[in-house]
Amino acid sequence: MTPDVTFTTYLVAAAIAFGFGAVPVAYTVGRLNGINVFKVGSRQAGATNVWREVSRKQGVIVTLIDAAKGATAIFMARQLGLQGPELLVPSTAAVAGHWNSPLTKFKGGDGVVTLMGTSVGIAPVVVLIGIAIGTAFSVIMNKKLAHPSLWGGIVGYGTFIALSFRPNSNIDPLLVYGLTGIGIAIMLHSMYFHKRHKQYFQSGPIDDEQDSLLHQDRLG
Image (cartoon, rainbow, N blue to C red; front, side, top):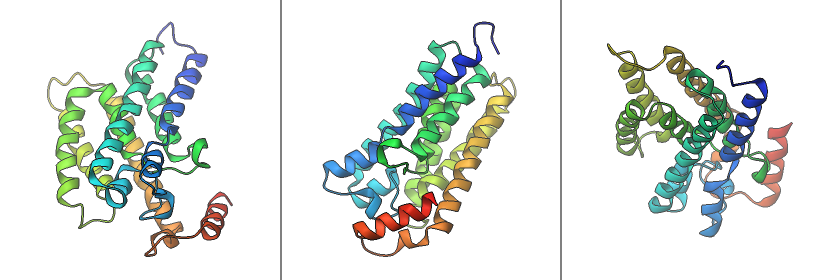
């Protein structure tokens, strides 16, 4: 902890990051196009679901804005004095906000793109290279994998790890471990969601009564 950073600093940074993460971009874009993303496709508010159920153009827009949410959260944390591994706190909070947005009854998406945004804010060069490779993989495997953005994120992070541990790298190993840990948490969160809510992936939309029952089951 740097001299000017206190426990309150962490709380404020985390609260700001959670707020940015909780902005329901995918849900809003879907609604503007007459679609409730929580009732179609994967029933999640993420770029992949918008890409598939709304349009590719809107999916790209959601990707860029969700990434910007994460990067802005890190920028704000830096303004508060956080640096190095300390930035893992707002990074985690931003993903948590994306998972459970109070603005959408604590529903959200996987958080892959939001984590990519926070990672760009932390280590831009190596992360952007990883994103480029991961995105290419995601696009290529879009119709072959159930969750291409998730697996694209895994490939991108593999690249990030390899570049971070290269000779003469100036990236703190704690950042690498921390960001990788958050990435693993996202993968486990997604796996748990899909295992517990298989009914979300039935073909066709679900009605309001079904949606209410499913949401109550999730909270219960």
